[in-house]
Image (cartoon, rainbow, N blue to C red; front, top):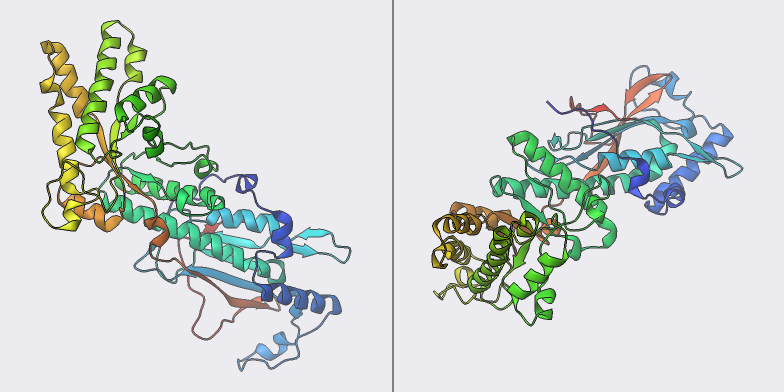
Length: 438
């Protein structure tokens, strides 16, 4: 069963341009022409005079229809198969509350929000099943069809794609890295869709995966904060010395900032991972010996990230002639990093208790794999039991299957009664998951 609709996001959090939405600047032009026509007919009091559909008992009611005041029921749906994870509902609500209505003869805004029913964010949507249903005077919301379809399509696509990635990862976290591949303005919507997908996955599986967004804007609708690792440019400011760069990073930043080292800058992931991990452990151990536990935590290395370019073979990967298994971030590279870290403590001259501490320290360093990942590549790594702890995905979220939405009027109100009225091939489709939204 679907959840109840979640607590609403304040409309102000969406940063909507109310004036431009109401003017129709984000709408296909023909909707403005339609709205203008219907407004003109409403002012003139026009009654329907056209051809009445050949249905019993419809003639009398049709002749009383004030077309400019026509009330309709409209449903919004997607065709993506086999199913989609609904998202964008809150964004759609904010648009309706902000821009449904019209200007009067003195150019004053008069709100007229239609009744609305929607599925909860994070509900599985079957093809053609409505995610949103509106009921009201058509001219009050007709120009909003374009932006409503847009936010539903975008956010549902991202949410569905994130869910696909999480399922491929078999319960491992996924960093959300598409920000650099698209316009900055898309980040709040994309981040919200990512959150809905992760929370839905946690609800369905009983897990508690963290929300790993990369920018503040991605989390602005719920107060989430960006996280991540570091950039190659930062390491190169230290002339490629990853350990030196990361030690200063750990020293400068508060404890809540993740200490995840990017280890592929020099093309030697294993070597850089070991050097950085050892340097951190030395600082960690020294702080523990002096009784400074806070300082010790400052030098707890959470993870190492491999982001080897697809055309590069890392130094630790022996060539086989097979490009896919030799280059980029591959299963053999990740396994080599894990093997090296797990054995790092055995190479240190430590007393028994400190040796036990060292083994736990190095074995708890997680491996983050990024670079060209999508659900198919993640599934391949998981089948091979590659020791990845966290995956990162960027551009695939924008190349995944489309989630186009369509909106159709399916009923028209005549003399106080709803009459089935849809284009050929369409009809009113029930969805028991719909809940009152507005």
